[in-house]
Structure formats: C-alpha cells, structure tokens
Length: 59
Image (cartoon, rainbow, N blue to C red; front, side, top):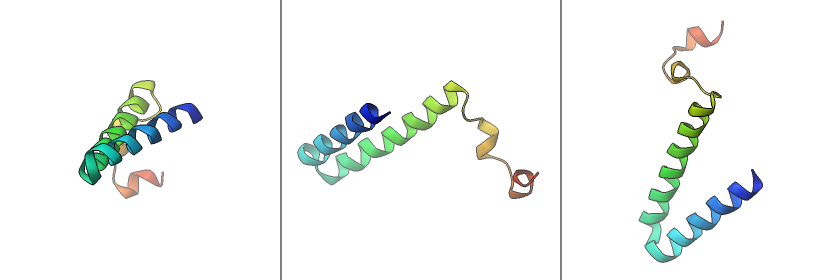
C-alpha cells in the first residue's frame, strides 16, 4: 500500500506542477473514484452502504 500511495502522490505532484491546480484536482478526484470502484470490485464495499438511511446503520 505504501508503494501505491507513493505512486499516487507522484502523479498528483506531476499534475500539479505541469497542469496547474485544475489538473491536480482532476487527478485527485479521479483517483478517489478509482479507489472507491476498486474497493467495490474487491468486495470491501457494497453499493447499499452509500444509500442506507441513518436508522439502518445503527442496527
């Protein structure tokens, strides 16, 4: 995980340096989306986790 974090940090650094702040935000947002999709495909997340009401989470 440390290597993946280092690669993500380097990608954000390059995007910020060469593309400006807008590119930095785009790379960060796409990285977050990729992370969530990856966790979903691994089975660590379920789609219902995002759409449950607060009352359902307490049970």
